[in-house]
Each structure stands twice: as structure tokens, then as C-alpha cells.
Length: 218
Image 1: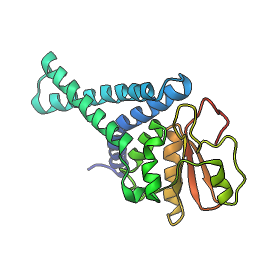
Image 2: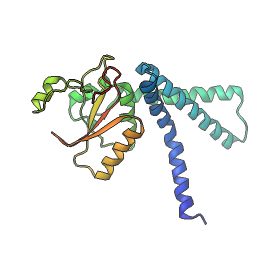
Image 3: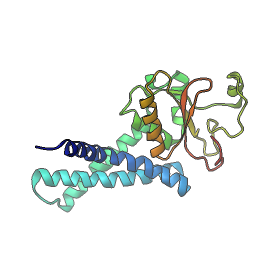
Image 4: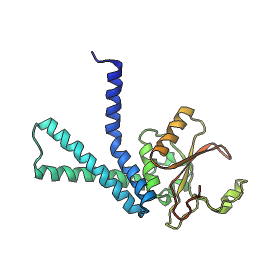
């Protein structure tokens, strides 16, 4: 009979294997953006390559386990194309689509594609675990802060940066359990994003990705 410890260890290994392709996709892209200063498209491409290679390993293992044969070169090519399609389709969906109920207003939903692509990948991935994630703010202008009764910020990452993208987004925390809010914050932090909990005009989690044009911006 398996012990409780063995059961939990088995669950942990399963969850790790399940989430590792997503971790490589996002964390790899963040690393290339932050440390190698690569363009957003190249950063995401790098993350996709890492994720695709791992998915190929998974599929080869599944093929060998179910058939009892080593994969031939021809089969390996087919598996590689399948893995590339899976990672590519997922990434494309994450970059382009945000459901209405995940945006506070239609305007914010329309601004989704103006967010930095790596930030979009991070948001879309967490939606698999929490369908109630809601973006409450994305792109801003200096006058928006004055309308909220706040001083305008010179280096806000809510402003479009020189690369054309907004590098910050706010996610609602009000009305959710603190454990959930903590886990959400730790997810984005572990993926390499900057995270701040703001309780000013409305309780929310401020998520941002480094802007090389404004490295001290928030």
C-alpha cells in the first residue's frame, strides 16, 4: 500500500511535468527579454523552442511506452511537427484572445493586444487555473491618474513604451480569498514578472515586465 508521502510526491511530479512546458515557454521568454535584451517576438520564439523540445521528449516517451518501439527518424519528424503545432497554437491563442469576462470593460479587452506579448502569455496561462482573473486596468495616459485623484507618474509602465507595448497591467484582488491572491502573486513572481499589491483607489495586483527604456519604472 502506498504511503501518503508517496501519493503526494506522485501528484507533485505529475503537476510538475504538466506545467513544465508552460514554465519554459514563459520563463524562457522573460529571461531572453530581461537579460539578453531580445525583441519581444524573438524572446517568445526562444521560449517556444524550449517548450517545443520538452513536448517532443514527452511525446517520444508516450509513443515508446504505448508501442514498445523506439521512434524512427520519420516518426520523430511527425512528433516534432505535432509538438510545434501544439505550442504554436497555444501561444497564438494566448497572444490574441482575452474573454470578455476577464476584462473589466470592453475598452480594456480591446487594449489586450497592446500589452507586452510576454505579459499576455503570463496572463493567458494563469487563466487555465483561475477563470475569474479580471484585468482592471492596462493602458493609461497621464491624465488618467489625475482623474483618479492621483499625481501623474513620469515613468509608469502603464504608458506605451518605445517598443510600442504597455508593460504593466492591474488584476483585481478585491472579493477574493487572500490565499488565492497570494498564490496569484507568487505565480507571476516565479515567472519573472514584477509584482506589487496596491490598495489605493481599488485593491489590485500590479504586474509588470521590465522596460529597458525605463528600468526603474513601475
